[in-house]
Amino acid sequence: MKAIYIAGLFLLVLIISGCTETNENLANEQNEREAKANELVLAVGGEPEEGFDPTTGWGRYGSPLFQSTLLVREQDLSITGDLAEDYEVSDDGQTWTVTLREDALFSDGEPVTADDVIFTFETAMESGSIVDVTMVDTIEKLDDFTVQFLLEHPLSTFTSLLVTTGIVPKHAYDENYQETPIGSGPYQLVQWDKGQQLIVKENPHYYGEKPNFEKLTFLFLAEDTAFAAARAGEVDVVSVPSIFAKEDVPGMDLVVLDSVDNRGIMFPFPPDEETGEGNTIGNDVTADPVIREAINQAVDRQALVNGVLDGYGSPAYTNVDGLPWWNDETVIADADMEGAKELLDASGWHETEDGIREKEGLRAEFTLLYPADDVIRQSLSLAFADMIKPLGIDVATEGKSWSELESLVHSHPVMMGWGSHDPIEIYNLYHSDMQGEGWFNANFYNNQAVDKYMEQALQASTEEEAIEYWQKAQWDGEIGLSAKGDASWAWLVNLHHLYFVREGLDIGEQKIQPHGHGWPVTDFITQWKWVD
Image (tube, rainbow, N blue to C red):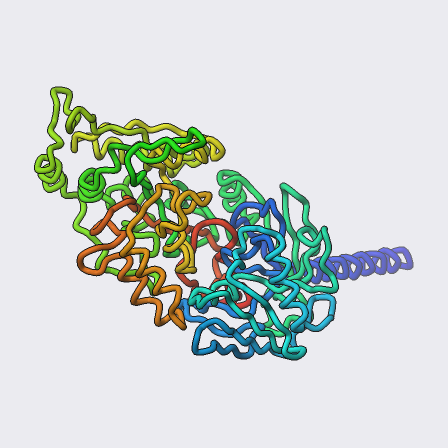
């Protein structure tokens, strides 16, 4: 009897012990689920090789994440204050006075003051980077939370600089800042394993809307690897090219976002000419406006969207389609091959026996260049060449490295891509003062009347007042830089930005996406949340 009692007692201990372990396991699983509910794993773009320093360009496309900016663009692209509680522009448009909120702290607990704002922009001036602050004459501190910018001339696009430049801390900025950023944004950097991942956590001192996710892990994966990770359930948000968009990914939904991330062909504008340095600018064939007009008229943009982008895109007519400063009168009736042929016939471009047109001994042929490592641009180039061949224009295609393109871009048509929330991009691509300035106006476009409109846009007091002039620069009914006017580009498509997103994760309303650099989808990441 005693033996039976002991055996029963032993069994009871085992049962209790087993239940305890089971309960502990359940508790651990519950804790693990709750922890994972507070963190996300993302593969939404490439690794910023230059690091995370806004004074050298970090954050120009999308949120700087670690830093906050004086102003921000909302989903409708309107501008509101962020670090700036208020700002005023003088009647002459040259003096901008910015009042800072007084409750903003950097992630190390130090306050954000006027000194930090001045330090940020002065550092950007000295860096000589892509952050253009050349229009700023002086920056003055009026008090600890008020800064005054004096510009060399009125500039309606100055707001964009205040939207895209994250403020860095004067007290904690050194030569290693790009790898160890401190800022007043919603997140702070924890760990950066170069080439692999970036881990960030919530900034406890952030003054804005508290993020719903305490930890984010950004994975730097090739497109096919990122897609495989999504199918394996290892990421919560992944950006994908269109070739993966129609695949089934268990537990994830496809999110399609409109963008102004465009692709188009830049045609050398003047005839062939050798510069004093022995370089060539211009192209005799594309210098003929009828060639450029006929191509714009003949190309079938929707067919390129359907065939190359698998339907995930839209026809493009300028570099600013869909933005507030876009002139929708620039939309032309394309895919008109017969109309384009008549244009060429009437201007003396006659077909020869081999089907290629000639005019006064000049054959209608050129080589279209594209970045060799870009599959979409290669596919667009090949499709374009086939599409235009029936027009009697022979287009060869060739992939080049970016360093090779740098010396060829002035004399060869090139498949380019742009797309920004800053209207200054129109000026950079088309104003004659920007001819040959790096990749800006690399085709040496020149129209003094269009220049005048763009100058009036820049000199306007506000971005809203400038819109009329930006639109007239594109097309005023008689002249313009668009396909209805000089047609120095054949804009082809705007890409859709595609993401697979974990079911139940709401990434909120997004604004039209800019060009694909950076992580624009994270712009409103503090609003991301789980939903039932």
